[in-house]
Image (cartoon, rainbow, N blue to C red; front, side, top):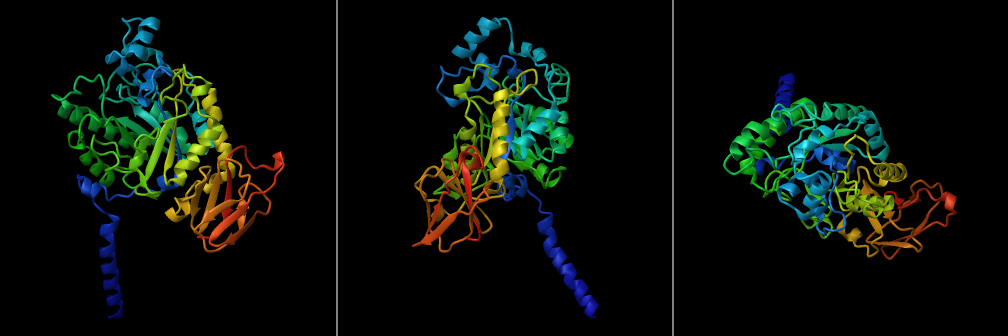
Length: 461
C-alpha cells in the first residue's frame, strides 16, 4: 500500500510539472509574449552584428552631407537609388553610370578572401559571445542557396558560396552562439506590394524563414523591415508559434521585437534600439522593464562604407564605454562590422574588436552574466561611474580614472573591495550609509587596462 501511495504521488507531481515543461504557445501575442528570452542570451551581454552583401560593392553613403542616422546607411544603397536620393544618385551616375543597375553589382560581390575560420577567431578574441549575420537584407539578396530567390543568392551568383553555412560552422566551433538577421520586406520583389502581399508572405517570406531555421539552427533571429505592415499581414505570430513549439531550436532561440509595424517595444522577444533610437521605450527610472539590446556600427553605417574616415569611427575607449553603459542599463550590445566585397574585415574594425577583447579579459567579470542594480544604487550623479551586480557582489565601472574617492549611496554594509586585474589592496569604508572607495595610486605599468577600470565589492548586496 505504501509503495502504491508513493507511485500515485510521483504520477501526480509529474502530471503537474509536465504541462509546464511542454508549454504550447498559441499564434497570438498574448501567448507568445509569455515566453522568456533564453538565459544564455541575457548572460552574454556582447555580440557581433555583420552586415554584408551586394551593397558592399558600391560601399557608399554620405558621411558628412546628411544629418539623419538612417541617411548614412550604406546598406540602403538600392532604395536610395529607387527613391532618387540626391547624394546616392549623383554618386552612382558619376562613378558607375545611370545604365548600371543595383543588380549589376552582384557578380562583383565575390568574397574571394572570405575566411570564416579567421572571422570566427577574431570574434572569439573580441570577447563577444554571439554573432548575428545578415541572411537577407532589404535588397533581397540571400547569403544561402534559397530556392525562393534563384539567381539572387550567394551560391548562384557572386561568391558561389553558402556564406551562412560556412560561417555558422566556424562560429559554432569556437563555442559561440550563431544567429541570423532576416528582413521581412524586399524593396524590389515583384510580390512585395499591397495587392500581392499575401502571396509574398506565404510563398516567399515564411518558407525562407523556416528554411533558415531548419538548415542552420540559428540561436538568434533578428527580424527587421517591419514598418510597412502589421504582424497580422506578415503572419509572424504563426511563424513564432511554430518556432517556439516545433522547430529544432524551440528551447534555445532568442528573437527580437521587429515582427510588424506595431510590435517594436511591445511584442516578440527582446526589445531593440539602434544608434539609441527607441531607447526611451526600454527602461524607466533605471528599472529595466524588458530584455533589450542596442545595435550600431563602429562607424556611421552598418554596411561597409569606404568613405568613412578616422573621425567617423568610434574609438576603442568609446566602444568600451558604450558596452559598459548598455550593460549597466540592463541591456546587451550588438556591435556591427561591415566587411568589404572581397570578404576582408577593415583593419580599423579588427583593431577595435581586439581592444574590446583585451579589456574584457580583465573586466569581463563585471560584464558577463550581470544585471542592472536597484534604482536606489543607480542614482550616481557622476556620469563616468556605472554599476552592475552579480549575486551579492557589486561592480563599480569607471570610464574615467577616478581622481577622488568614489561614493555610492544606499548601502548598509561593507564588503571586500578589489580592482579587477590588480593584485593590490583597495581601501574602502562605510559612513552614514555611503560606501566610499579610495582609488589606488598606481604607476603607469601597474594600471590593469588602458581604459575603464572596475572595482568589485563582495557580498555587499
